[in-house]
Amino acid sequence: MTDKTGQCMCGAVEFTAANAPDRFGACHCEMCRRWSGSAFLGFSVQASDVTWKGEAHIRTLQSSDWAERAWCGRCGSGLYYRLTGEDGPGAGSMQIPLGLLDDSAGMTFASEIFIDHKPAGFAYAGERPTLTRAEVMAKYGVDL
Image (tube, rainbow, N blue to C red):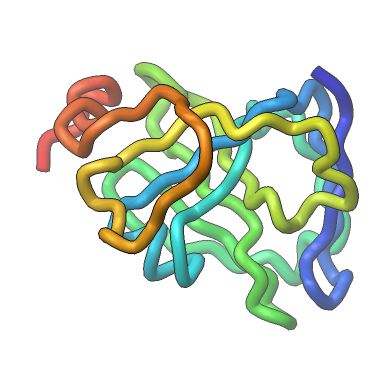
């Protein structure tokens, strides 16, 4: 784990993520595809380990009963997906888009979730652990 820095497209919002992992994953759920325009590629970090600059430009939306999404109010860049629940797996974590990083060298593509919702034309090289929608919902205790 190491510190990672990044910013939105226009530079109005910057961040430092302490204790960032060297792994990232993909989410193929409908909301992530609509939010990012494709599969969401991001890494998970504790929200308390992220320091933001330009917070006045951060906009948020409670996008589900258990999470919020944030973006830069100036350029529209997606900034994070954060679990808002206080208990359970992932509590206090946020997923930050890989594309915001100043340097993603050395990061490994480690997992895919909502694999059963992946568009037919998507084919990432290599093998990695996957979870279906039902497996994700069971893991996080969500009832849809």
